[in-house]
Amino acid sequence: MPNLNTDVICLLDDDPSVLKAVSRLLSSAGWHVEQFSDPEKFLEYAKIHRSPVAVIDIWMPLMSGLEVQSRLRELSPSTRVIIFTGKEDPLVRSTALNAGASAFFVKPFDDEELLTAVRLALAFVT
Image (tube, rainbow, N blue to C red; front, side, top):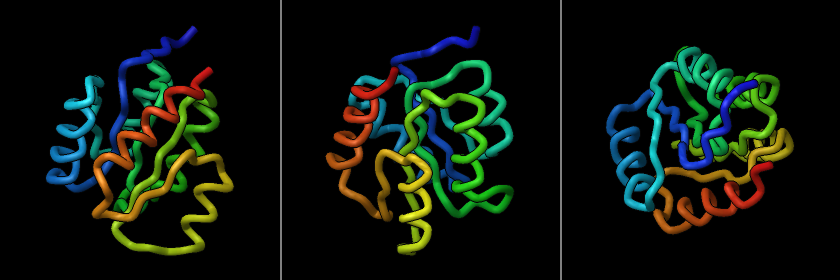
């Protein structure tokens, strides 16, 4: 049976500066952050560790965040997904939310809003 790590937040983004900044923010709130720039490596990790929350970027070269979200739902249905992106796109937003994302943010986003979204997502982890 896979592990459910209730204090680990997974972060997936192909931009190292975003990974660093968002990881710092999440760590400052007391969570352990596992960073990924490769969607496949993230999905391999998720299959074993079942992190309660994953914060996923939409626009990545190897695989879109929507595809990652879809595959993650199969591997770890209990993982709550928060999507963030650099480009506002109503279709992408509605697709992500309809597929079960608990929140959707456009960069740059308000730090406190992201932390609140993570806390809310953790509150609904089963």
